[in-house]
Amino acid sequence: MNKKQRQTLEKIFEKPGRSDILWSDIEKLFNTLGADLTEGKGSRIRVYLRGVKAVFHRPHPSPETNKLTVKNVRRFLMEAGVSEDGV
Image 1 (cartoon, one colour):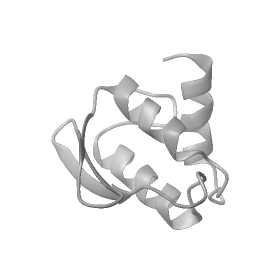
Image 2 (cartoon, rainbow, N blue to C red):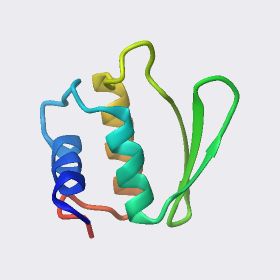
Image 3 (cartoon, rainbow, N blue to C red):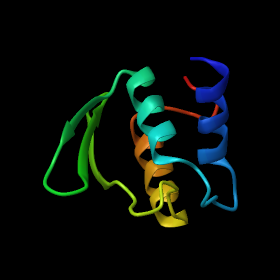
Image 4 (cartoon, rainbow, N blue to C red):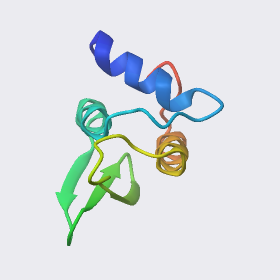
């Protein structure tokens, strides 16, 4: 995991939640963690990581995620066994 991806992970686990994380950075983090990403209809994206599945919506028109999405990404990562330090 490179420095940028570590920073993205730290931002996801910050409290209170942030609303300035680029969705593209979150997708890159998912890929680095070994997740399988598949496109759904519209802006949906299915993510499968370590036996855990989730469906997210890419934000639009703004590239930044909102606080609720960041909270859901955090919960998904925790269910998949990913902690703030990336393990």
